[in-house]
Amino acid sequence: MPNARIAVPDGAEQLPSHEAIDNGNPTIFKPKWLVVDDINIDLISFFTFLCGCASIPFFNISPTVALPAVAAAILPLRLFLPRPKKPEGLVLITGASSGIGAELSYIFAEKGHDLILVGRNEEQLEAVKKNVQDKYGKSAYTIATDLSLQGSAQELYDHVTSQGFTVDVLVNGAGLGGAGDPFEQPIELTERMTHLNCTTLVQLTQLFGRDMIKRGRGWMMQISSVGGWMASPGQNLYHATKHYVRAFSEALSVELRAYPGIVNTQLMPGPTATQWPTRSHAEETVMFGLSGAVEDPKVVAKAGYNGLCKGKRMVFSSWNAAFNATFMHLVPRSLHLTLGAVFNAPTRGVGRMREPKKDQRERGKDLSEKK
Figure 1: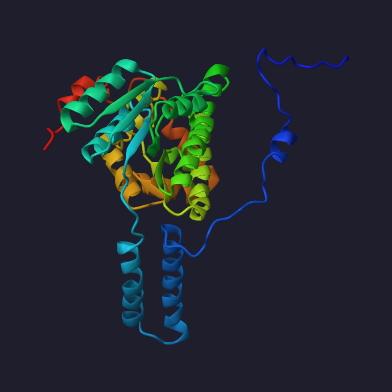
Figure 2 (figure 1 turned 60 degrees about the horizontal axis):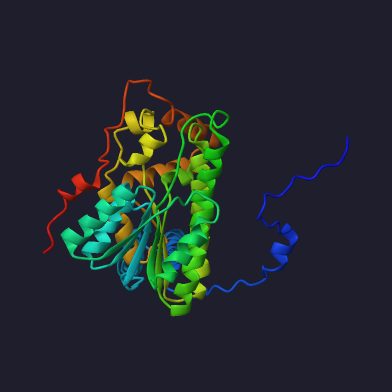
């Protein structure tokens, strides 16, 4: 069989993978370890509790003495530390035309921030902009673009900086999903889903994060999913992208110790009543149609904002979301996979998620008037 070479499209450059690696420097790893963040507070809490429990049999200390002493040591740490600064300055939100992204826009505007709103639906972006201006008196600049396309992250960054904007808070909220059999899904869908949910998120974090590091301050929020803790037949590719986001964001929180003043928070929503389930054809699944655990995007957005203000590495949208993630992480994989398949099984008309609000002009009627 003769050899063959696949032609590169006109205008495209092909960089050998070894050159891309050689141009980087994988030996550089510079996080600080002795910092007061939620990772170290978790470690201190765990070992304090372990030592307190061990002191009971080994040193004959009464549980009525040991356990209150452990609580007295742990609770102040968990209640009062760390003490990060609340977000300040200009906020850029992707996926801002609906759902969690739109709700975060209203929260940030209410807290006094000007906004850059990014999304595909220009009409709905303008509606969010009008709500922000009318209800909270803050300015909003809209950018209608499709971030699932190759090079879109760099184009967005170049446009924002060319307009003279300085982004202090980055919210990576744009996402694309698709329920069903991966062998029946179009290749274009899987390519765009992976690019938007993974590549674009990382590139925007790099591009705007470098500027934040130069200024010595900045806040980033990665909107992931409880699906990032699950392998889910029926939502295979989407949940795989959220595994990627979870791993990237958690490790980033440690790497950012090298850059004081930069906060990265990952928001973990459970099933949420946004347009995402209807667009991904998941509104008639057990998870969305029958579980009764579908969350309000306003509540999810509030949890994310509060977590960012507290400098949390990861924040769940509800106790239910936290329980499901922990449960699915601990049970045997056979049970995990079976439950994942059941949750994403079609209801075939038996149950359907209530239709979410699509028009942000209608949402504007519900917003509180500016005080």
